[in-house]
Image: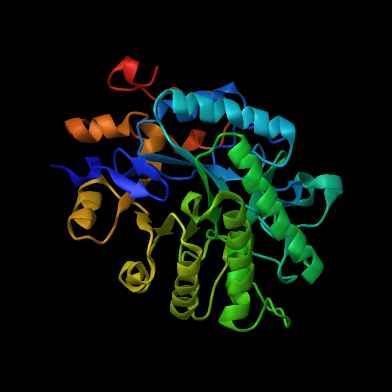
Length: 356
């Protein structure tokens, strides 16, 4: 029997299979960060996943990092997301919201009153971000004060409350891809001299405080975290990643989280072997997996559930295709972040009724 199709307990939820849909930015919200009906259709089409993790959702207006990404900081956004969760639940699915504060990976044109992006330290990242006017260079952010850090933590807590009000089954902290939590965690982007910088314990403080706030609202059994050691995306680099992530994961034990989601892309060591024994909840692996690789990892006991990204993007009925050994649709990269249905809700299913 394929282990991908065996049930698993993740936090308070029992999932019917071990296929997890990865969080993927799709840029289909409106300029106010409100997802429309097309977003409900997209996620409902993929409700055969054991668990869906939503695209990154900014917890506050100052956390937005890209054009047409969604938020969860006002009533209109909550109401819109409620239509999404209702559509997923109507088809028997389960969905967590990924909370993503972009920090320095933003532009004033995306933020209220043209504000500067915020970060642990005023260090300009290399690279560009998408705005309404196309690609723009990152700029030098301003450093958050200690008082402002507490406000950001409170924003995450309120965003968690709003996500639950919108009907999500749980929340995931995005602590990878060079966004604000990883900016605090990594020595290259965090050069603070206070209690949030310097030592590994200090640099991990922000991530742990955010998780504590999220757990206070949802309970640990409805909270997960995503990390990606050595991914170095968005110009975030840490000098001692093995030490950093070992410490962080060991600290997670006291929070009794639902899962640890680890995505690896060309890391120098086997972080799964390093981190899984240090975490007591479900261990999720992502990063370029196919069905064969996922089944092998499950058989070896190295993973509890497998996370699929572009395969789910292009195949709304991915579990059906895996069961039947059917060919997969190829993802169209040109439409990953474009508005509208093209390359979003129009990928065909094997059987129309599967995603109708």
